Length: 134
Image (tube, rainbow, N blue to C red; front, side):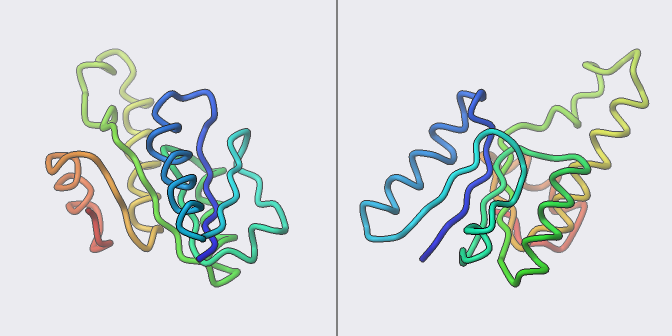
């Protein structure tokens, strides 16, 4: 299997949520290619079987997901945080909270599978779409 991973190299969680799993797969004979700098789709990534987009959201991430799907590549979106559900963090920024919720919903609806770290977050994502969430 050939896996493309898109994860922000500056986020600590990318190492254990994206990079280390790719290394483990490589140890089992699979190939992996990581883009940790931005969401651009390198031509060699169009050969992958599946892509993991880890913690990225927004217009760029949706465009990336659409490009991957256009190439016939399955997309797994992983997110281990639910900041968009913490309204108290955005008490004076209602538009920011609304934007974040819309971005997360777009990723959940567009992915083939969503992975997260807690049942509480998984339930929130299941409320948004029929996309399988684990």
